[in-house]
Length: 250
Length: 264
Image (tube, rainbow over all chains, first blue to last red; front, side, top):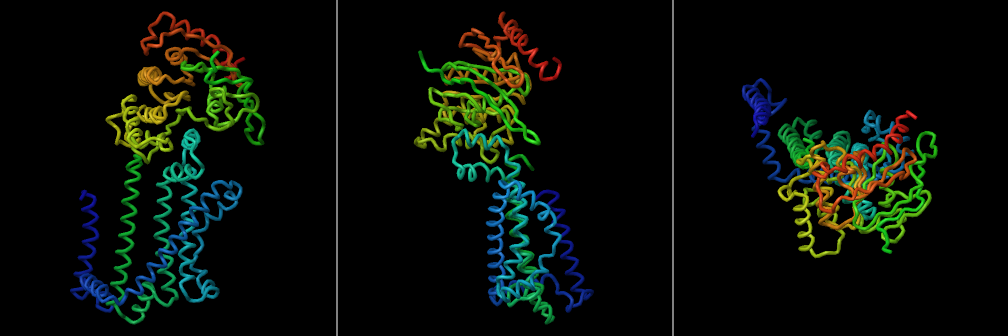
């Protein structure tokens, strides 16, 4: 591990150790928070017992669905807008201010229309993610050097071949930024709306445990979310790192 | 009489440019014939439509007037088979290693795998990149990246190679050495080479014939024959005729270049 890596490890490890000490000495009482080692133990037990499997599967399933939709729609919309200059210029201010709008405000409205099923949650997560994908797709396509498209024509590549073998890999690192954001937004959208109102899922279970002073459920679930997002982000960052270092961009 | 490799007859190119769009006469009318296997260089003042001329021959853009033929067949605004282009800008593919970049040119070729691999190896040898077969473009210098692009063009064994100021971004010494390599590749492949450059000495050193273009709209105002032997390298700059040829190019070009900077 690098020296910087050790520093980071020391910061996180120190914070956990501090929490442990404060909990064990009673400075933090049990109703507020459990000691970190108990959280880990409870998470292990929870996963082994399988009592949260339904909630985990529901949240993960909805997140993946929202992510796939955001990526599919976002990349296609980005590619189309890249060609339709006038429409893009019209929509640009909308994209620029989009994230100033709290999308969650629409959640009750979606529940009224679609009912309290999975649809409103997936829709919120999709709406959060899709614009990040569109914006980064446009950015990536803008940066494809014109000379590569000329090269494709000289090599007599078909439009589909050009898109898949020239444009897509060339814009790759920028698209990946969109993917990373979409992953985070999908998670936030699904779990956030489960908190507000839903009939299941990790967010719902945390909220339910919170209302019932059930720390043995609440904290392990929070830890689970942390671990899951760190793991996913770690994999994507690694992939990004490889792409960028190959291109001398990092 | 043999068919010329390329024939341009009364070729004109007019663009719509600016805001509001107005017609801009980029080049022409141009009449030009490239002989099979010759090394033809084009020099001209900046902005005279040299690159447009290359794009017209490559089929990347269509002429407004006139006709262009490649080996007797008209080019209808579509890149023909048997022609390779090396651009001024870096066109290496950042996501592929050197071997992948070179093999990219052969992707659609209907050849057995072993034959493709062999061709890639041979071309990497020819351009001196064998030791960098698994490097990525980002790890290479500008000159080496340009050689990757040249290798990707050569691997397709084109009969005509168009080069648009391929060494424009390189320093003088590297340019001389790249010129040597280009001459060697030209001899070994037997292809016709069409080189666009703004460096007069580079044109004199490399070419059999040099076309001098006028200020915009660019026309060919002079064609100079160098009469160099086919076996030659950058030491030709020591030849007694070298200065005279370069001077004749500059004599024609000086007035044209003055027009472009508004001194007429």
